[in-house]
Amino acid sequence: MEGAREALPLTASGGCPAIDRQDRAGDLARGRAGEEGDRRRDGDQLRAARAVTLERLRTRLNEAVAAGELTPSVDVHALARFVQTVQNGMSILARDGASSEELREVAEVAMLSWDARTGR
Image 1 (spheres, rainbow, N blue to C red):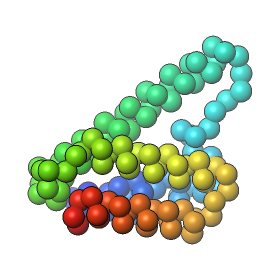
Image 2 (cartoon, one colour; image 1 turned 60 degrees about the vertical axis):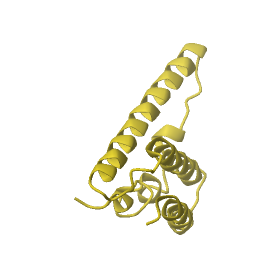
Image 3 (cartoon, one colour; image 1 turned 180 degrees about the vertical axis):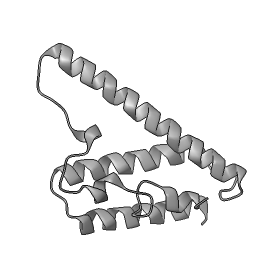
């Protein structure tokens, strides 16, 4: 199993969708103009998708704690929210035309925060 840090969706090895598809809008950052019911339904779908993403991140980080990759004192929920927030922001940047290089730089800075928070 690869380490939690390497598996993050902010790194090239973690399969960062924003870097992989910098020329296309990320699904979670894209909205659709339409009637009020469409917007409400879309909003509900986006919230549900974000909840699934958060749970997957929390599950992976809890596995990392159990495996000794991360210290038990790490706030798994906060760390998962951090990763999710950066990933969502990178998706918006990709939609707006940021280059792969710019997205990699954002990911590198985010990983410095990861390292500082996890002590790794």
